[in-house]
Image (tube, rainbow, N blue to C red; front, side, top):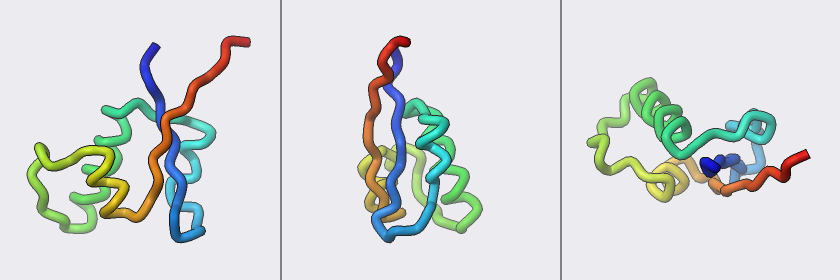
Length: 70
């Protein structure tokens, strides 16, 4: 099973709240954050992107979730 993640906004807004309904894989989440960086003009080498880096840069908490089979 592939791990999926949700994002909580540490500033109390609804930034990436949609991930609670559509949790993302690590790869998908990093792609979203890379797009944010591109759109915001943040020039960071791809190798520097990690979940920890993204959490610190965007002031969010990235949490793994587990889904129970129904």
